[in-house]
Every structure is written in C-alpha cells, then in structure tokens.
Image (cartoon, rainbow, N blue to C red; front, side, top):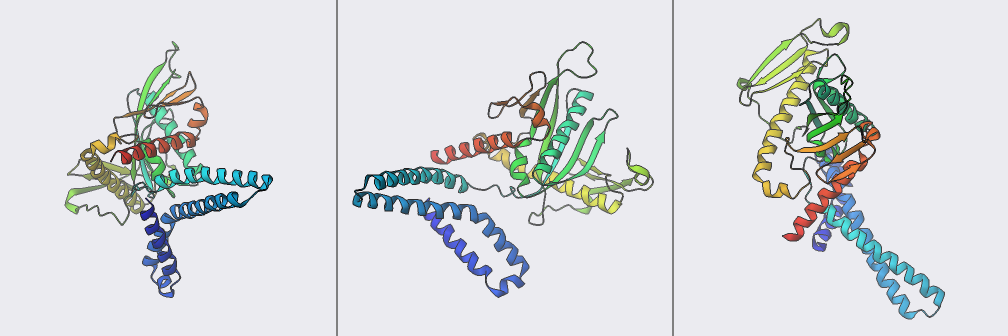
Length: 358
C-alpha cells in the first residue's frame, strides 16, 4: 500500500509544479485535466501526509519517554503517544478506503427515472412522493434539479417522471437508489382501513458527457414533434414544442415536453436517450461481472427490492444492509443522509473484504 501512496504523493507534487507553469493556464483543456487530477488526489495525499506526521510523533514520543524522568511530563507524553497510535489506525483504514478503485461515473450528473408499478393510483401517488423526496434531498446538497418529462395523473400522482440532477458527486450517492421501492399504508381511497402494498421502480443513470462515445445513427432514430399535453400554461399547448424520440434497435421511446422551445426539448430528449443507451451498456457489463457484483451493496438489478416505507409503523427498511430507521417522515422529506452514508460504508466494507481475500 505504501509504495502506491509514495507514487501518488510524487504525482501530486508533479501536478502542483505543472500548475505553476505559465503555459498551462493558456491551455484550458490541460489545465482542467490537471485540476481534476489534483482534486481527486488531495484527500489521499492529505491523509498520507497526516499519517507520516503521526508516525514521526510516535517515534519522537517514544524517544522522549526513554529520556524523561519527570512523572508529569511522562504522563503527558504517554497520552500523546496513545492519541497518535489511535489516529494512525484511523488513517490506515481511511487510506484503504481512499485507495479503493473509484467508480468512473461517481462525479457525473445523473438522470433519474421513476415509474409507478403495482398498486394503480396509490403507486402513482407514491412515485410523486419519492420524486419530491429526491428533489428535497438534491436541494439540501445544493444540486440542481431539472425535470425532463412527467406523466402526471389528476389526483397528484405520477405514472412516471424523468429528471436530471446536476451537482458534484451526484452519482456517487444517488446510484444506491436504483431498484424497487415498496410502500405499505392505508390509501386515502380505502374505506375499510386495510393496509395496501404498492411499488415503484427507480433507475439512476449517469449523464453521458463528451468523454463517453455513444453513437446514435440518424437511420436508427425517428423524431416526432407534437403539441405538449398536460398543464403547461398558455404557451405550452399552442406550438409543436414537444419531442418524442424512437430508437429502433432497442425500442426505447423518450419524450420531452417541459420546455417551450422544441430545440430545448430535443436536446433534453437526446440526453435522456444517451443515458438510457449507456445504462444498457453498463448493465450488460455488470452482468458479465456477476461475481464481483455479488460482493457489493446492491447489484444494480432493477428488479431488486431495495427498500420498504411502512407508514403505519413510521419506519423505513433498507433490505440490502438490513437497516431500519424509525424516521419515515424526515426521510420522505428528503433527509437521506443517514441511509446513504450507511449504504456507502457497507459497500466500502464489502469491497475491502473482497480485496483482502485476493
């Protein structure tokens, strides 16, 4: 591990030297690349620098203890020695986590797709609640949310909704939300007071940026323009602004009508289509790496039941890590931090265990 850390430290110093060269600032592409690499390396370099300082502190304390006769000073040195040793253990674990192979998509923006499943109108109402939960969570992270398409029903529910979340590290956290979410509660329309179970599916896809080459041939696409439907104010329904794309090879159909401009809707529709095609490619790669996936939290399988929201008991249970939290109201309100932190920690622990086996 330490050979790799020394290499990373040297590389960090090289980057810092390059960034001070006058020519680098004139080459924006190179400058951005170096800044990104510097940002990625900073946490591990800071941890390793502190680790080396703590190791030196331990050596100094041991040497001073051998030479010191004053009991008060010896007591203080022993306390410092104990604190440094404890911090070394913490830093070793922290560095192991930081050295884990990074998901190349972690820094990307995400496109989220929520679809109502079993349960009719109740499932559509739950889909709308989960959509709002993610919006509130994104706002708490200072991320930007942009709706791409929403198929709403009259009672405030959504049959499906697609939206983009833009912000630093959005995929690194939101990726744990892919799967089937289940709600257990008494619907407002239920006169007998019986608890119903409904489901929705959530798909979280990284935005496809310029670094990823997704080729869409013109002959494989049909573009239809039409008037937008639903509530959109005075202008939405009067022009052919809505765009529907049909991708013949996969049968994927995407629709965008949230903007008044056909050009903007077309751009959003293509962004969604690219994300879906990239997602298919990712899923196929995951299927080929089934053994590795089994060691991680959540397989990424869209049919995997990941979480239950039980309203009568006020609890949320994540089945992947067997975690139950009795704070349903705050979670539905967008407080996902404890859930996601627990999932990330469990995922890291599983990966570390897998690495130690090899």
